Amino acid sequence: MNTPFTIDEEVPTSQSVVDYKKNQKQRKVLAHLYSEGTCTLAHLTRMLHSSVPSVTSLVEELIDNQWVTPIGTATGSNGRRPVLFGLNTKSHYVAVLDVSTHDTKILFMNVQRKVIFRGDYDLRLNDNPSFLTSLVHYFHSALADSGINIDDLIAVGISMPGLVDARRGLNLTYKNLHQTGESLPQLLSAELTKPVYLINDTKATVLGESRFGGAQGKKQVLAINIDWGVGLGIVVNGEVFQGASGFAGELGHIQVDPDGELCFCGKIGCLSTITSASALVKRAQTDILAGQVSKLATFRDHVDQIDIDEVINAANSGDSYAIDILHETGYQLGKGLAIAISLFNPEIIVVDGVLFKAAAFILNTIEQAISKYCLSDFRNDMTIEVTQLNGTAKWLGTHAYMMEDIFANY
Image (cartoon, rainbow, N blue to C red; front, side, top):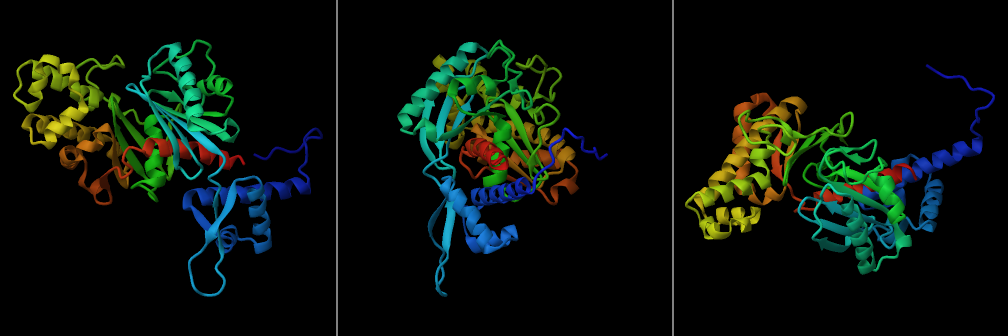
């Protein structure tokens, strides 16, 4: 229903309409250069359906604002070579804070996603206000070590596990991170003096895979993030599917064993209690203590030193026990994914997280379980791949989450 103007409403002037259309075109230029890397004025003119003088003026203004810079000439031998333009990598840096239950990584990246500085810190996510205090401390320390001027930093993006309420900026799994009820982005923005973005780690992962990984160009994507929990990132029609509160994709908390173990969420027999990296390590430690024959038995007197890398290394060296538990993990993951496939009918599933290094042992059994528990017609136009991004999907997705919003509001 159309709402009529009242005498108190401001009627847009012709100048404001012109400015709005100009800003729209500049947003498209920035977004295009972000996804494509470089292009010529002629290419931008065709993309914007505009004139060369108009696009030249737009680009010149973006150059003045240090967003765009000429970076060379296009290849070719016919006549004068056109100038290539790209995003200016000498300003407008962003920080990515990759928070997990086992460590924190802080990265400073330029607008074309190159890591300028990376710091790895023994800071584990815990449900206590002291965590945020430590996070702010490590951020300032990393900023000083990076050599980046804080005035050149435009935003900070934080990815973390848990039920991240995208609308309110809260992590409902870690409710005691602060006591004020204020959103985490608002709270941290006041401390860091920069805009702060918050995103669930699995949603960051699927966004990274969708924009820059094996799922690039796909409209319907699932990314299974196997870390110390199990998360499912969902892309529908090219955009990350959040759900009503931002919780969509908690595949790790579907029940697969009614008589199984207690999950940290309080439910019994969740998929995460069988297939997460922490569950796999816990099982290996228990079995080795019980006398299981395996190369991992060298850790029998100090099983706490068995971690996921040790299990994968044992499997790679031919240890039948390690191979068996990885196979079973893949099969259980496949059963869970069969449910998601029936619901979302994806074009591609990308396997990511700490277990992607065990792809040789889990991928086939994932596919076997999907073939057994999923209607065959769902498989006809679907592929299953291991990530090509070698652990960077989460960082790239957090970067894209920030930059796409910044460009959309330019």
